[in-house]
Length: 240
Ligand SMILES: *Cc1c(COP(=O)(O)O)cnc(C)c1O
Image (cartoon, rainbow, N blue to C red; front, side, top):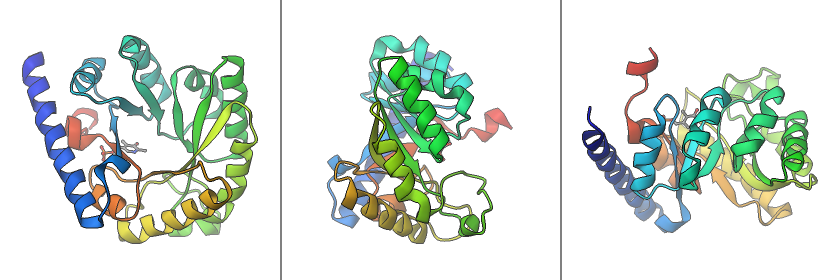
């Protein structure tokens, strides 16, 4: 596909997505300005990041450091805000802290400390969200396939983030469980977010909602939507 065809395709997708967000906001009696769009560009090339930026997208997200680091470097001239949204090993903290502005997937004390120490060493500040596990089995000590802390541990992890000088506690993030009603899951997230915000008033971010469930997320108070497929196409055809 030529660059201009690809740009036209992404532009059309972006218009559709914006219309969905506006409709969801209208239904929930919220202002679209309260809801930020993060384009998740995993598996798609840096060229698509450039196209998104040319269409006014300012925030991009990735879930693997080995893919994100070179893409962020290739597009550094665009001045984008980079969000890291995937499960993260502590030994990748140095790399991620060098280009990410916000890490959505902080799910343990050790990772918070590693990110904070690496950001500090690099002279950067990093916004961190507490990733909350909304799977029903999280309480049984089973680590959900999608990561995150048990809701009952979220406030403690928020405190660990808040106390690090190089970290800014931004709020919470979650991925809806594969099974079950996303409205119920995102309601639960909203409850966790409210408890954290009561103690840390600036931690207002609720990162929830992907291509398939953005309406439920907006209805339940999401402030950040992480959208990949709806903007760039279905990844399954590429990654198998
Ligand atoms: C891939 C990914 C997304 C985007 O998902 P889509 O269904 O493509 O919109 C959002 N959040 C996380 C954590 C992801 O890994």
